[in-house]
Length: 125
Image (cartoon, rainbow, N blue to C red; front, side):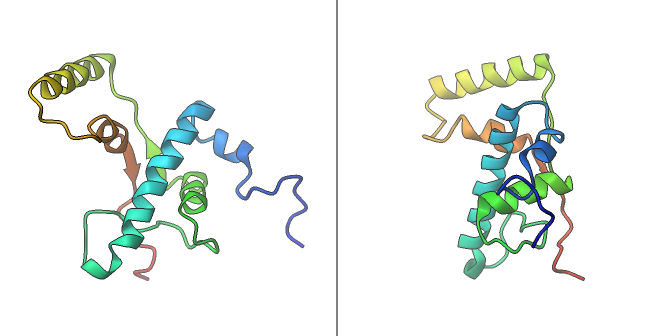
């Protein structure tokens, strides 16, 4: 038997919440990284892409589980932009939207750019 935890989730939610400032940040960070992991697996046959591979050796093959394991290990982190940067970004996004330069996923780029994932390949050793 494992470690006798009272939860079915591994890593435990309490450990994950210690790595972020709120449960909403945990959801945003986990979902953004899970989408990146999913994109990595979908693009495996197409050669090297710009998506970072999973940074932890995981028993689970599910992207959300892998993302949570990366957060618990400190491999996937986030940064908050300064209020001035955020205002400038919002103004630039509004200008781009008015000019018709944004696609349907225009607002999602803001979250993914703030996601920091280690560049080390865990399978390289």
